[in-house]
Length: 234
Image 1 (spheres, rainbow, N blue to C red):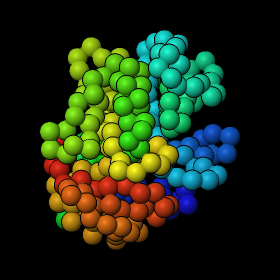
Image 2 (tube, rainbow, N blue to C red):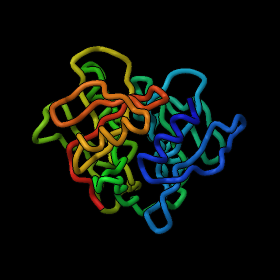
Image 3 (cartoon, helix red, strand yellow):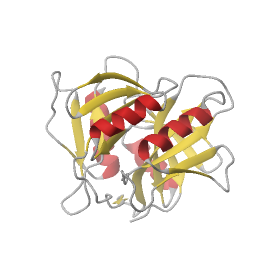
């Protein structure tokens, strides 16, 4: 499934795949074209399951780990510059030392002229854990949680000047209407989501259903993501 997902996401985002790395060659990075921005998305081959998780980078790595633990997170595994952490509800994330990426990748222009960009990770939260998780992510990142004025179930972390992190991908929270484990999925903004759907289907993705302002899709590796009806920035 790794190769199928890599072929899809490189084509869908206009990137190339880095050499694979890791003990099992399980990691690779989507590399933007020269001058198009810093790399901010990686692929990881896993033995079971699929989905999206977030890596947060900090100048003060040890301080970030201390905050994570103080906010109810659990450090599962770590070395001198990387740690795998569970949020209070058990959602896995990585906390790492700062690697210097600052430039948000430019939108990808599909053959039909449609502009799109993989620009958001949505954390899907059951009602019982929503507030605790939002407080955890806000406290860890130093970013303010801002409710959506249009969709009552959504809020996001709003970057601000002087923050410990300046994420190239936005972090969105979605309050679900059911109790289930916390998970994450990717969001791709598009100037024409219906055209992007056709392009993605030609690359092997499948349409799942239509939402209020988005299309739910499934990539060739089985990962669910959304095409958002929103002009991509940059």
